[in-house]
Image (spheres, rainbow, N blue to C red):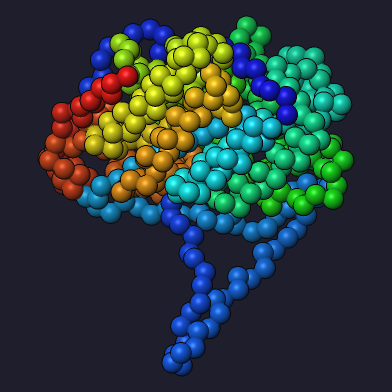
Length: 423
């Protein structure tokens, strides 16, 4: 796969901010003990999954996605789980093998994630003319198309990721940013972009010639329920298009706080969040690129600073986690790219954060889709109470009193304190 060059993302953290106070595992197989002493019956063999090919066989219906938690309403007075979502923009498998690596990391530490696919990663460069980007020439793109080897590798990782229980969302296609980018698109432009993203997934065999490869085990038109726009631009006109196309959430907002999410016109809004930037007088958006932009300003900075920059991002994520874990329990959103910027220091930072966070008691590292499921299952009055909690603020008299539904329930406690981490 061609190395991806990102155009500048809008960076909310460049300006100093006022101080802010403040899944279920799959059942394991194995022998089952018989009532007859000394005998063990073999584990039950799961029934074969259905397989119904769709179109040219690039995708197939195979039944409900495996390893999905069943959303349940929070019990009266119960403490909410601590949700954390790690997501990846432009997910694809190239020579760095980061898609496969982080799938393994997720399995090791119990983290289900969201992988936002750039649709043209399933389109070979010689077929670029099949992409008609809105307001740009046919066959053009701000990022590279793929080659056959890259398509095969990416499809294999998509297949495995879905079977592991992860979500395949969309990062759309051509990654057009800035003056003539997605920020100027109309709802109809976005509808065209979404339709093409789905088409590339549903026709990758025909477009690549890899007709003997197994299909993706899902219908992308039905599985696709959310995405993140390039450079965090264009959400205003994306929302009506996304709603019409069946999306349930959008993760394109360029700036949010660590509070419980709200809906925009019926679509869950999952923004990148302002999180602590250790050693600096402001907060940064919870994404690798935004730390990079405030450190080196480019992808190949001073090598002597790589470890320091990675620690800053890792500790910023961990500080943000502690603030919400001990505070309002708002979901934490962390966005990333499969890249080797500044020697891969941000990949190391994210992996260390996953290792530290996901095994913690009461933590659920989930996909955006799974978070949407849980939120939609909750009592609206309980959600409203959660949404009232400021950044880093737990209920003063505890969760039982605050979410009991009784009149006079206590308000939020003082903000959770963040202990700075030494460089």
